[in-house]
Length: 480
Image (tube, rainbow, N blue to C red):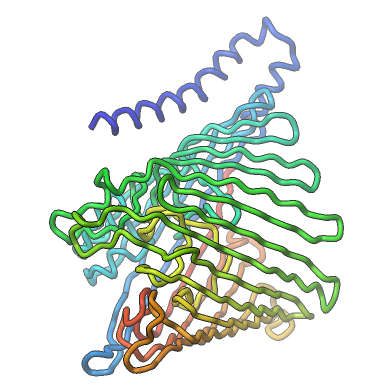
């Protein structure tokens, strides 16, 4: 209780200081120069109040590989969200304030554990209080309550409840809204050189209402007597540092290091270049690597393990994207090595899903994470603008597919059946309103047919075949 009170008091003090102190300064303008007063006014003059209305509906069927062999409902839900964000200018060209939050309302009648953790409603109070009793929550959550600072034209910083991004190592989970860290970040831009450092001690995904400490264990609230929040699993903080240099010819080189205290070290390298051919060809090579320390698992309940990886686990990726006339193309390849108990590569600095998040750029919207030990995977996608065909701008369609092979568990073994592949086919259609009061509103329908004939979790993080339909409405709003 004392910790909660301290957190709230500290946050309140920061907000009050940001709002009251500049106001006191404004009252004293008569004793100061006009330039001083004008500089303060930029806090209001450069402020922005934005938001959005959102709707998400999803129907997902999963194959019953252990019984009928038929598809049955695995997830069926609908959620609405409304968000509001205030971003001030910089008072005296130094200090500002960011505030943001959103509300979510679940429209689902079918109460099930899968529907509860649909990632758009609230699954629980926080990461370790997600009991999956089928009751998806409604309510409100803060995403931003942070002071921000500017030092000259090159350096910015922020601290409080905010979003952190360190290329390749620290990011946030997203629904329509971002996850939130309790921490801070400093960034610098010096010509072609970008530098950043971030640190945090708590986090919440956007489907939780409160931040919580980091842990090297997995969350299993349904296991009696087990909690990943026990002191033996606690991670005091995570932090990361990165540098990126962009050359005049468009080549960019990024190097990053991230760490969760006494648990995981992560490394990231990216080489990107854009070629001035076939409408602009953007390419990259990306490396993500992590290694973990062990801990005493002898007293762990729920069958958890004290070991995550044996040696260095990694993912390597090659990407290419280009445009030609009304068409856009993506071709990407991924290779994963994740030996040890986990058996798949974790894109974050903590072990449990949604206890923190990394910044892996590879995402194919094809259900699987394509990150099993020894797995190689390819993705190819094509999008086409329909402006010339329908006689009105804003319409587009896309088709894509992914295929992965050579899947093994964390100790180099294949399933008894010998099956070691997975594949998916996707279809997208979207429309963006081009003018009028609803300008910028996006309607998008996405369908995935994912195929893996093994039972769910026959390999770590690999589930049975699915058919997945998602529908989005995103309406951005600007008030000032």
